Length: 278
Image (cartoon, rainbow, N blue to C red; front, top):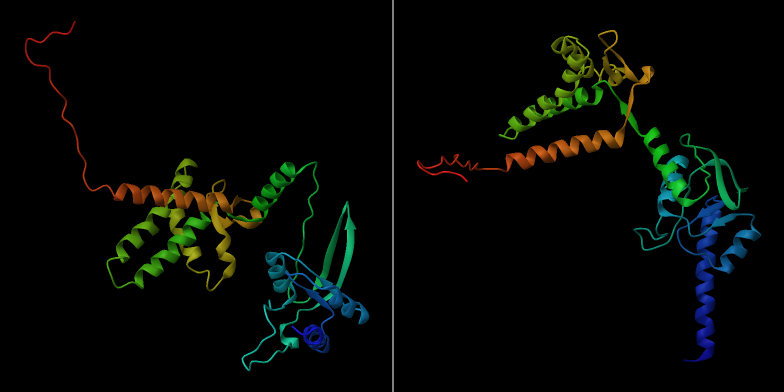
């Protein structure tokens, strides 16, 4: 290949990169976060205009940033007209992005996001094993649902309404599954020596009015007073992961039992007359 042509190809590639960066600058963006790498030439162009570029970000982190800043995750500048464009509609907003040093690590901190409030929890520990355990504990503490039978009653009301929308025999098992969920609040009421039928009826009536009064979605059994109350304000909460796993395991156990078509029972063998055991 002719060396002069090779050099022309390299210059054209550089020009393409420059045009793409110019489109980003002209749209008003001054911070760029990407999952890939960034060439030194691109860093130079960003530095000249006083912009920030961060490379090799995790995709899951970028999605969270996009959600908090009301940005759109862009994988390419190409549009439907076979051209390249970058507009303000895909950009997010925040008041400040700074690089801070916490312990021995450098972190990019995004403050006062425009779309919705967001927060980060920084955990510090002696080793990775301790940090992993701390992360699981924090995750369990943050992802919780209301206790006192609130989840089961809400699922019961939803599944019964969904069952009525079915016009086939699937309606029957769906309604039976919904009815089985009430075993939890009924058992809680019985263990507290309360009227389980009356309390479960009140609990279902509260959750059936969630569309009109959203605050009723936190309704659960108050087994001390024997009434239905707001379990969120009372601090009666359960880890979401344990609730989901309990429902999954119970459902899988029921499906396993229903798959048994026949039962073979062996009659007890009677000893024949005259036989003696020694």
